[in-house]
Amino acid sequence: MMTDPKTNSDAVGETPDEQVLTDEVVEQESVVDEGVDVEAIEAEAMTPEDIEAHLASDACNDESRRCIEQLLQEVVEASESRQRALADFKNFQRRSAEQEQRMTRIASVEAYRSVLPVLDQLRLALDQDPSTSGEQILEGVRIAGDELEKVLSDQGIERIEPAAGDEFDPMRHEAMMNIEESEVESGRIVQVLQTGFVLGEHVLRPAKVSIAT
Image 1 (cartoon, rainbow, N blue to C red):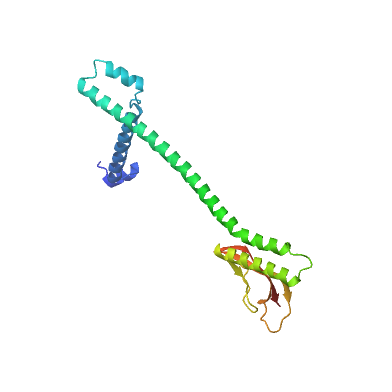
Image 2 (image 1 turned 45 degrees about the horizontal axis):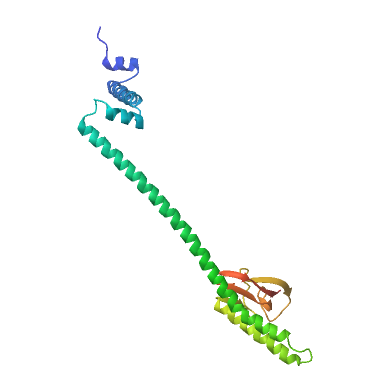
């Protein structure tokens, strides 16, 4: 009795197309396994002693010996070049650090030098005879203050001194107290209690202010 091919394939659980795909997968896995076996038996890298022994053996002909010796010479030259590059880079880092420290010292010297006239003015005011008019002493202190303001301005330092009614900025202002003020909108500045200072984007000291409630 003849068997229906379709019924027979259903009985074994796979169609002829599925059988072909299965055969291909098995074949691919076999290839992969063969590749793994090949990698597993690859020779290990030769040590310098192995290379020297090979060069001295009869198995190494003159042409191979010249190629190997040329490659070894190129390796030595590359290693020496790398060492020189590393040494140059370390010297560059050292010189850069020294240059940065030198520039910092120069900048500090200039800043300190610019403050000396202020100290001189304060010293003149303090050295006044106590019997001298207080107005003269006050004038000396005022001159010293003006000199100091100029020094700070030359260094790029600016005042933070908002006007009454300005919006409160927590990045530049510090609220010290709340005051009931009908003429100023709530939450805005009423009065500057202490001037602030800023250098570029860096706030050296926020302005201390009172806020309207």
